[in-house]
Length: 233
Image 1 (cartoon, rainbow, N blue to C red):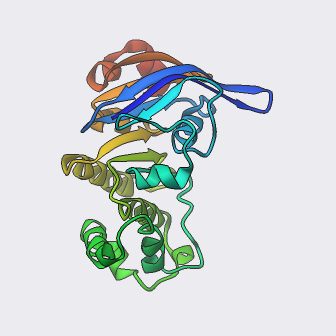
Image 2: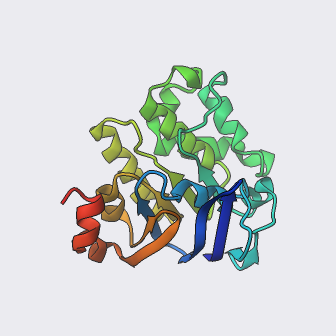
């Protein structure tokens, strides 16, 4: 579904992503793990069109998107939940969800909102509440719900557990598994490598902008070097 070839990204003179290539198959959960500053978020921003790679290609569902505008990428079925949630703080929960529907036919909005409320009952309870008054966990649910309003084929999640209490982290990862079981392909960036590898099918390990290890998730969980560097063991 997604194929990255020879991605090279710069921030000014800083060489952030160095000749990265990887793929995500339809129906998979694939995770990118690595230390802070390794380049994980930069890769997601480049895939979604917020940054540009100097070389190579980004192919989504068989189409080249490396020079495609972000809003067009969303229309094609690729949604990005950024680090830090980035919800519209002065809008209500329902208004945030409506903003996520702009690429879809108008007559389907109520149905999509009902589906999001079914997945995130807390959002239905808070539907008239301003997003800025929600807890961190509720804002994360809202950011994911807003992305789901666009009916994505591929959902990219950047640090969904950041700043959340352990119980909420478990809930978010259960929802990730449920979305995948319902047919959504997921590319997951997550600092909590143990949780990420527990739900993923495959993983890629990044160090200073390069992929240094790749394997199925179960093997990475047992890899001594990966355990020592990222899994607390």
